[in-house]
Image (cartoon, rainbow over all chains, first blue to last red; front, side):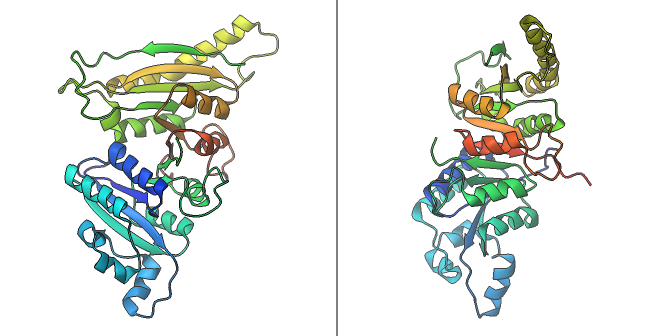
Length: 163
Length: 176
C-alpha cells in the first residue's frame, strides 16, 4: 500500500480564503519530503483561437513549475492570476521541504475537472476546501467539494472554512 | 441515550520533554466491522506518519489517536436483554473490533485510546469530534451499507458535511 518514492498530492485552489486554508493544511500535515504538491486550479471556459491554447483547454495546461506560476507575465498567457498569499504559501513550502511544487490549470467545470485531474495525473490524494468562491454561503458544503468527495477514487481531505 | 467508555491504551513514547518541532495531531478514526474502516486507519497511519507517530530518536511525542466505534441503538441486543447484558454484549464485540486496529497503532508507535458510543453513528461521531477538540477525522467511504450504487455511505457523507474539523474520506483501492 505504501507508495515508493514521492506521492502526488493535489490541492484544489481557487485563491479563496478556504482554498488557502486547504493548501496550508496539506503542507503542514500531509506533504512530506520527496512529494509532488500539485495546485489544481480551474479557470473559466475560454474559447481560444490559438492552437496551443485549444489543446490546453481540452487536457489542461502542462504542469507549471513554481517559478513559472509565480510570474505574473507567464500567468497572463493562461489568464489566471494567482493571489500573492497563495504564492507565498507555495514558495515557503518549497523552501522548507524538499518537494516539487507545480500548478496545473484546467478550463471548464471545476466539478468535472478536479475529478479528471485525480484520474489523469494521477493523484495519491486530494485536499479541497469545503467552500470556495462560488456563492451560496448558505450551503453547508460547497457543490464542488461535495461532488468531488462522491466521485473520486483517491482519499480526499475536506478542509472546512470555519472551524 | 449515550454511554461512553474511554479506555486509554497508552504506548509509552518519549522519555524526555517533547521538542515541539512539529505539531502532532489529535486524530479520530471511526471504526466498524467493515474492511473499509480498517483500510482507512491503515492509510492514515501510513500517510500521516509525520503528524501522528512518536519519534523516539528525537524524543518527540506523537499525537493522540482515538478509535471510535458507535453501536447503533438496539442493534446488538434483543428486546429481552437486561441493560447489563446489552452493555456486556456491546463491550465484548467492541473489544474484538478494536484488537487488530490497536495492534496496528502500536506497531506505528501511535498513542491510542478507544471510545465506544451508542446512538446514531453519524451524529455521535460529529459530537465526539467537537467535544474532544479533534484536529482531524478519518472515515472509510462506505462501511457496512450494502447499497453499492451509492459512492458514499450515509455516515461518511454526513460527517463530511457536519464535522467541525477537517475530514479525510478514504476509499479502498478499486477492485477489478
